[in-house]
Image 1 (tube, rainbow, N blue to C red):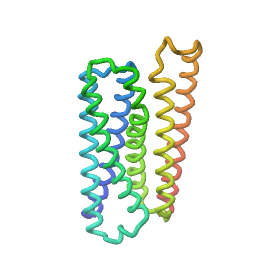
Image 2 (cartoon, rainbow, N blue to C red; image 1 turned 45 degrees about the vertical axis):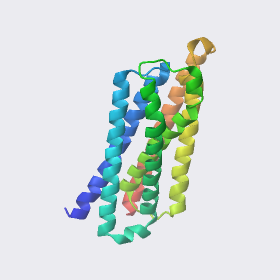
Image 3 (cartoon, helix red, strand yellow; image 1 turned 90 degrees about the vertical axis):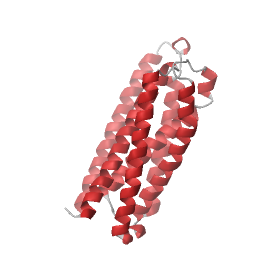
Length: 222
């Protein structure tokens, strides 16, 4: 295998690491703040997952620079331009997460967060979490699939839709399910919650299936 092939594999692996770390971070975070209380162990795990994210991003950037050095024509390709934009989004989102969210978690580690405090930051939590997951997922798909002949504008529309749609869904889950106390819930809220879980599980499976089909078609076309 050539050096270009090795760096390409490393580039894809860094994106996959980012997806895994982002999923771990989000799942631990959402599970921890369900009762508005984060244990020291959970905080440490979130910090470790965040450090893995940083490591994955550094490898993604360095391997991308190496690929660009070996093939300057990549700079003119829409898929590479879209990937660079995603990296920029990840950088901005990472700065926001470490500047706003991490200090909040550290301050309230092992302490119950006031309801008003959480309420005023639900959009921040929804946007940073969804942006991280959607951006890493987009970076991995672009790295794996490569150039499919789509214009830069189309890549960005899809990525923007994933981020905005994910933020709206995350905000709804935070405000209507996760941070709703048992005493404030209607009698049938648990049934409603279970129905939502099934609904979003089905939507996720369908989305993954569509992405798999598109990836296979793109691979065949290439």
